[in-house]
Image 1: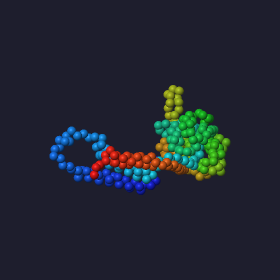
Image 2: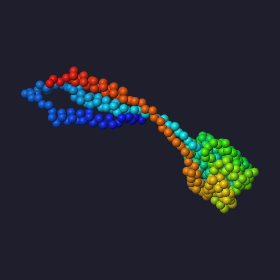
Image 3: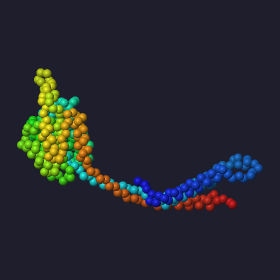
Image 4: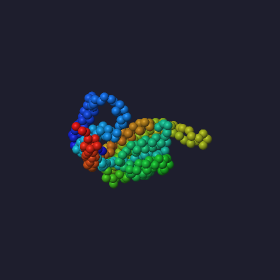
Length: 330
């Protein structure tokens, strides 16, 4: 980064520019004339080094003056440095991996596959936050603790699949497990984003009791009910016909999810398709913005000495040439 400490001196550059313009316009408009009876005297004349220097001397003088003026404007080179201060958010993602997540109402894939894709997009869109992952069915466990290593977190998310624990839906236990990971966090903002498609039917902790414990720790919870209510397509493996679909009843306990969100000062969202789910995670990401403050520091190095030296050298050279090699006779 280059700047001038005294930029008003740059206005003086008009002087050498005007000098050059005046000199060459004068030569063009009013050339010198000497009377000779016979021009054959100059037929074999050549352009010598003296002629070249004579013609270039005004430009050399103008360059020397320009460099001197630039030096007076004090050019400086700035070397920048940035300090980034982040006020990150600690986020625990809780993902339901119960058998009901196999339902294929989130075309073209099942609920779990689509949820993983959307969650991964959410992770990649964050900056400066610590994010962790809890998965749950009849039990809940931490798939990845809080981390800022998003590629590592994504790799753990990719490995999430059905059958990692016995089937069931332990929403209360998932909340407690996620909150336990956030309990010792010193982040100013701590949140849980819980996605489920069912009704709490497993675990030793009911969702409301868990929500109250979560709220006491100052943790906000966003709950997402994923999937359509009623009959949905559910894949089964038939020994004779292979994969086929049957209709199964899908039930989502919206009231409990709303209450959990309300107790923890969060919000409840409903997603009946993949697009709605993506929009929900985008909205949560917008609501929970990380504060990033950037301070820039610049150290400036003076450059005028080198420019001034060249300006004085060229000016001295112009004076020497004008008084010696191309000295004119009055």
